[in-house]
Image 1 (tube, rainbow over the protein chains, first blue to last red):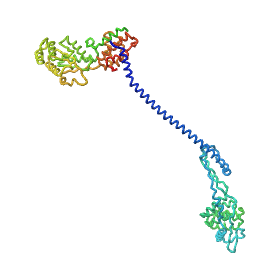
Image 2 (cartoon, each protein chain N blue to C red):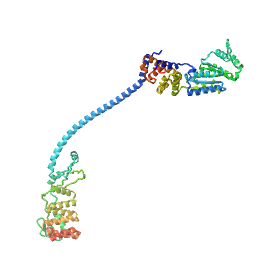
Image 3 (cartoon, rainbow over the protein chains, first blue to last red):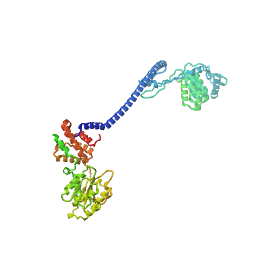
Image 4 (cartoon, rainbow over the protein chains, first blue to last red):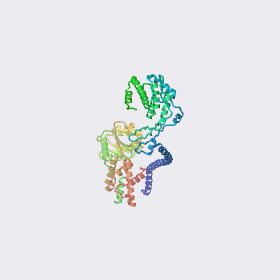
Length: 296
Length: 271
């Protein structure tokens, strides 16, 4: 006779035994999953915390920077308001504040050299003017008569006394307008505005004294002519001729300055000689205008 | 379902070699027919081998029952290990000579050689569990068969360690070898159900669904003896529950739990 109860117990043990490997596998897998999850979560949390800390730190830094920026901005605004008398902002489109701050570059000329120039003596003194006039004398056969105060006549030789530059009333300043990038076109413009022309001319004169470039003296002559300082215009046109007598513009400025100084005849003679020498159409045109009274 | 059905079903699977319990399966029938053909041939010896529980004893019993009416056929289910006793037993069965004193191999050979065959029909001696005979005894049996006055059908185990066919005295051409194997799940199902049907246990036979058969086959590997033992124990447990705890056997199929319990009891499961 079978002992079924004992057999049942054995069967229960057998079932437990048979489930053990599956249970072990389940436990192992569960443990593995839990471990992986734990490590993942742990790393994530720690990273998250680190991130949070970093964000907080960054925020603090940003706030600090922002305050500093605002202070700087306020300062800049005050400066810009002052400078706005000469600087005309072109930008109309709205751009982000930060971007504008980054892109806005303001250039302003260093004006230190003006102080140095002020102490310097003007270029052309009397001796130089006489020397220059002597050169012209060789070219002009007939002496210039009835010359006004700056020009003197002595016997056969013509001596032109050139007025000495004493003072310059106006000045020109070259101011580079702040470059404002337009978002649509992305182009930049430079506005040149007169401010202290005199100082600028002085700067060019200083450079001319160093390298004796006729282009610089011609530039100065033109500027003086524009400023209606005909004496200085005459002076520097003559200096240009001395360095290079083939520059048409220097002859024109020279002649025009003579006319403006009331030495019309001398200007006519000078132009005629130059026309004979170079056949300049521009000089001819000016001569015609002087002769016809169109140019006074 | 009446409890007596489980008892009847159980008793069918008692592990006994009874020709009445012989189950005609397709593969078994083919093998049996091959065996019948072999003994008709002028072969000196026929070897029937296979693992324990594959039905060798049942085959020999069936063959003996089938041929004994037509010719002299003697079945020795248990080996006669004493040599003199072995020869004396065969001399008495084959020729009706009773020896009181010792009968050695030489004397018995003379007896066999001097006997004439009746109607040229060679008597058959069937030896079950022949693996228990010594090698020297097996050589003497081979020499006896060489006289062509007696034919041997030998059933023995084929173990994993030793290949019987490789033995020297089984290597001659005059030997016919027939191998018996375990049942497949399908054969096992037919085997179990046919056994139950024989005793009209239709209800219990229908409880063996493929799932139950597969589990039984997994446990027994299709071995007939193991299957008999398992199913016997199984119905024993069923019988117990039917009497003591009927709610445990309410299903229409054989309970997996009870199959496993039977396997634990028979040692097929090491619990």
